Each structure stands twice: as structure tokens, then as C-alpha cells.
Amino acid sequence: MTITSWLAASRRTVVLTGAGMSTESGLPDFRSPRTGLWARFNPSELATIDALHHRRESFVEFYQYRIRTLQQCQPHDGHRLLADWERRGIVQTIVTQNVDGFHQEAGSRRVIELHGSLRTVHCQRCGQAKPSFVYLHGVLTCECGGVLRPSVVLFGEPLPEKAITEAWEAAQQADLFLVLGSSLQVSPANQLPFVAKRNGAKLVIINWEPTDLDDLADAVIHGRKIGQVLTELNEQLAEVDP
Image 1: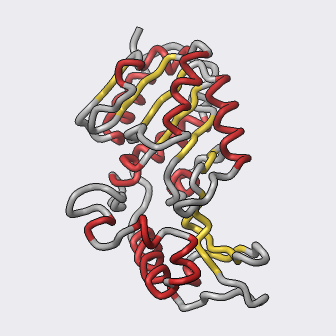
Image 2 (image 1 turned 30 degrees about the vertical axis):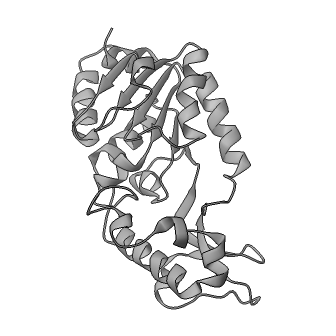
């Protein structure tokens, strides 16, 4: 059996995407040397509730930079193929560790965002949401007087309970669990492959570098761009009779 045949045969394929999916669109991740956000900022100090309240200027500068960078990038072929696979019934759910919203922009509808979204900001007091571009225009407070902050999970904050529950349920129901561009070092996302495998799913990991869960996987692909791999799989799917 091949990855293509597993995709064709699966009734419930769940995809987990991580930073490697976004970096192919040109977005810097947190950790990569020279190009990562650590090269310019210290996210562990700035992407925090403490910075939101006590280092407001630096917090705003950091997120203005991230929002501005996001506006300069767009989904790549891999994002668009996943959206097409959803429309064709090949993929049922995407769980993402990313906050860029590229899956939705590409057309995916069933997306579970574990770490929130950089596409909106919301009031820390009343919860009212606004498009994140208002941050670039200096709109930093809500009409109620509360502080506006990006709708992402900051360091030290719990992940949204609803997203975790939905991701867990999706992994439990999967016939095929596909990991794209995740180092699988961050909990609880790195537990989802275990959940899927325990319930009988095939596990495929496509990541530039090896991961600690490679031995658990039924197939592993390293050192290749996700968009290219998905394009090849899509071409092979056209030759397979589901």
C-alpha cells in the first residue's frame, strides 16, 4: 500500500499542519536560525499576557510586524490542494498549529485552529473582534476602553478547549492521519498522532526534518517541500480508482 492508496481508501482523513506549512508561503517561524522570529524578537517575552499589559509598546511592535508580514504572504499550492481535497471528499478535517489563516484563505472550511488566528484582534475586556489590520493603523483599544490584542494563544494561556476537543475527536475517528510540516514537539498537538494510531489510523509524516514520532509512522517523507509532495500525490490520485 502507498500513501496514494491510503488517501483513496480512507473515509476520514485528518491533516495536522505546523510551521513548515507556513514557511513555504514565506512566513518566518519562531525557531529557524537567521530567518525565524527569534532572530529579531524574543517571542517568549513578547508573546505573553505580561507583555500585553506591562510592555505594551514592544508587544504592539512585535504583532504589527507579524500582521504586516502576514499581509505580504499568501497560501501556496499545498494549501490550495488541501482545500480541493476537502471539496472532493478526500480530506475531512484540518487541525492546524498555525495562526495565519491560509487554509481558510485557500478555501478549506473544516479547520480547527489550536493556537487561534492572527487574522483578527479582539478586546481583552468585552471580546469584540475586529480585522487585525486595524492594529497597523494604531487602533489599539476597544470602544469599551478595553485593550485590543491579537486573537492568538499567548504563552502561558490555555489553548481553546473547544478546539482541543474537536481535534481529539477528529483524531479518534481518522482512518488516515497526515502530518504536514510539524516538528511534533509542542503539546497537545504532538499527542494527536498517538490518538489516531491507537484507533487504527495510518500515520504519514511529511516534514523537512526528522521528528520524534517517525518510528510510529507508517510512512515518512523528509527533506522535501510539502507543496511539491502534495502535488505529486494529487497527480497519482487521478490515476487511482477510489
